[in-house]
Image (cartoon, rainbow over all chains, first blue to last red):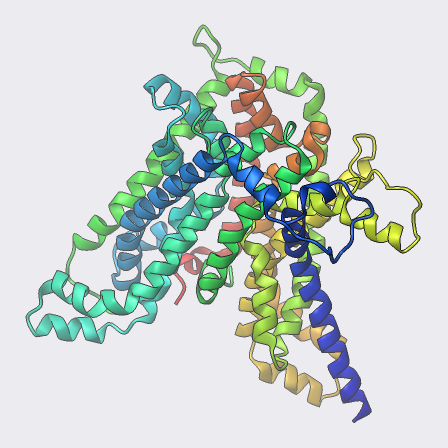
Length: 268
Length: 286
């Protein structure tokens, strides 16, 4: 009995310590972001500050380029979602529902591109885009982000369709719906949450990506590209607020799609 | 899975994404090789690579990239394994804790660097806590350019913090595939916790461990923004040098040579990965 109590204490003790390890950077960045201007360079800093203020955040939002960069980030991420779903969802459906020549090969392509350093290819791509007059353009950034997000979209959506029973679709087809009608009425509605999850994942991939976005743009920067470019010049307080803004939506989104994370980083 | 007769349909569905990936991977790959190996006159040259190797930062970047890899990957695999075993013990509330452990997954490498910068900077929280506790009397310069150990430690901590969740997801999925009866039987025969772990769980978890290690290794070759956030250019890494040669030095050929090196390293790891998986395992998960 005593051993079990001890055991329990050990389990919860380590669970809590690990939770603190996972959460503490978020806490520190939030506190840093809301530190009043007057206290920015206080030392030693209190872990539990007595006063908080949004004034530094306001300063950050008013500093030149930040709001446009955020808007650029949102535009690129939305484009990535659209391209990722338009290309990825049909492919995922095919992988989940059909046996066809090259199916295994395509599955391998998906797995390889999931790991392939596509962002690094921004360097040669930039050279191509410069020659084509497409350099410093949000669309090209979105294309690269789509290529990075595509395998993840296929894995999430594919997992959803595999889990959906095919009988419903077949029934709809026998009842005269036609292939497309059966898909639209019987397969699409229950797959919607999965498609939404894939969209959110694609959004986060793009929102977080910094290497390709930095290489491919000069003036039309996304938020991470803007932050990276000004790392050596911007004051610490503004860096922390920038991090706060980069992290906040991504964390909310990842919590929303937590059920689907396993399909992305499954057993392999 | 049923076999359907619509012969062309699956190809029509798959073709657009195949074409898209081909265009966005094959063409830039060819261009990278062209930039890296072609001379201005058009002929083949190794000059760009010679200049890259001769650059003072290259050997540092190579060493640092692998040093970080060798420190981060084992550390986070061990940490993720511990967390996975803990979560898989299904203690009351384990779902909530699991959710908390996966949250860092949402953080980009750049943001992770800045989050930990708040802790490690001169007037940051680490020094504040140490000073308040009386451990130090003046702030330590953890991230100073001449404090190599401090820079490496900060990057290892930030990057381990950020990507342990990914390894955790791979390992936990693997653990859940192992039938509980095996461990229970071993327990019945008197095997202690450690013996069960070493002789039952770990051997069965091997495929997941292998794939987690390889995925992390491939991503480690791209380590870049977390380093820039914490160390600036005081700690060169391969991807960071590629970035700097393109943006600061405006030499796309040397930048492309760095790109070729990173892609080549990744491809070697990917081939090892596919070899280990075998052909049948690459299908979409059911």
